[in-house]
Picture: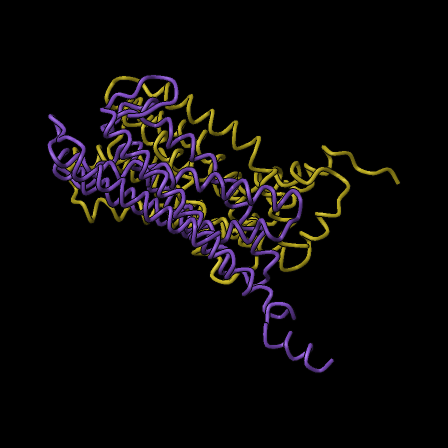
Length: 227
Length: 230
């Protein structure tokens, strides 16, 4: 029997995680629903003036996306850690960072992509239109993979630790700040008429850096958790 | 060594404060309020520097699998967090009379606040993992990941248009302040260095004793007992 190559292994890991999520749809639905509810609470709390809502829209939606991502971080490794799949994954004779990147990608498909797809609707709720709405979707499309990447480091570090849900928030949220600033900044500056391209470039840079470094950090954190 | 570092620290800080509070002339723009920089700037330097030192020890520990370097990491974190807090606190105290606000969301302040959270994260991660070896290594990785923030803090005043002023002192250019002020500030920095050394080393000693408390050598009484029996 020939050994599956790197590409097949990667595809297998991604497909397995996506399939698991499809089988347990309610998990995915919960974090998406959370996003919608959080975003809907703000107009109720701040008051329904369209001008106010439009100014806070970018920040609120980005923070909501951040929290939704944080909420789903526990799912990246915990189940596999508990039933021993992760241990087998470490034994696969392929570079672990690549496999980790596959798992993180699957996490993004399951938790980040729905946020991106849903964001135009939420943007409309806040009175964003035209270019700003497009910029919101674009910035989330570039930013949410970064969130998944950085988040996976935290998720791997707190694997099986007591109070891990809150701890991962403390570890990961400070590192999310640049993404939040650039992401919300892209929308705000496109609303101000100066174009959000500069912020989008910075978001892209964050994405490239995190794709390059985060899988290594996550892989070493996983080895520490399972040694 | 610890008492020596402690003494030198006390002396340097005392002289530095004397120069800073009494000798240095009043700034013609900021009045007396500027005197906070004698604490603020050295504390901010130390907060960043100690994080880098902590991360270096973590890297050494992860790379060479050395237990002592993780103990140093553990010993450095609280002092670093203290200096970060001090820098933020004195900054706020200076900001109120000068900028008219305790806090502004500019890049330098925000990134320094994030540094405080990072110190907290590293310390909390360590305490919430029961297995000592895993706690060491996990918080080491955590500390290393956080190093990204240090250049951001350092260059934040150049990269963004911030309310926080640019660097007052640099290695390459002539200092933009009076010699007396510079002397006071450098003395304070030196004092903070010595203080950090003294506190970190004595904390490291406690950490070692705590972790090795099951070993025979760490208990003077048991050593005496063994010696007595023989």
